[in-house]
Length: 342
Image (cartoon, rainbow, N blue to C red):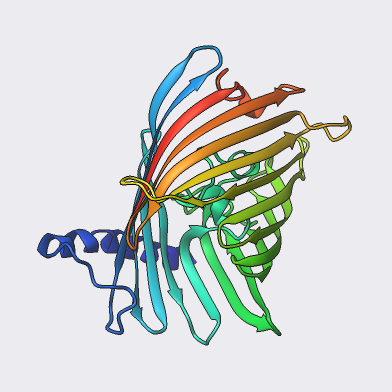
């Protein structure tokens, strides 16, 4: 396994520079939908914001600056490479993986990738509904790891079904450690992103002697032409006495209102309530948060942009260690964010 991971890591580093080489000669990359192979498509996300909390403190930051490339080598194999140029000032490699598609509906991916636990619209900057992630997408577990995963997509009558499972190092990204106990997990998804969709998931994460968590979760969402609503609940169960259990959930929704101006094509009001708790024996959640947002954006074939104005109200019933990094983490907060995606 270690040799295979090493091969994919070296391949990923080489593929990372392919778009730069091609863009030197032309600004128009080959369309990924083309029938000719190999092909590639460059994508990226820039997320910059300014925040001000209720005690008068403020800060500017570049939260994300992602650049990636994906493409097909032939009908049966593809690749994905993505790096984070600056995540609050830090560079990191996010995705380095190759995928094989031996039969219709089945895909096998080896390398560094997302684990089958979180919804992309909760952790992916270009898909998020708000400037800040929901509690369960930020404080539970890293969303990526080194490993192997499989997906199988089929229809059960008129219902689309997706089954995912994987085995991973269970450590951190970019760190191919030797371990006797690997992480594993999976999810089942019923429905599609348009209309009604339900997923259930489980992930076992034995990192070391003092850290071993098992995660259980389920979510339900509905999306129509101009609006959507989503809810999810997830439990972090500690298998050791060194950590506490945690439970978190959210309910969020948004509506797109089409407009016609020089800068914007739609207005998107959004609202979210999420909560997190580590004292199961005490009624009520330790921390609750209400987030209200208003976004102004446009979507074109290759580019999209949204200017967000969010305000977060925190209701703290019990101080939690996950918010102890600084006083601003659980303070009422106003955020202006500009998100650009291509």
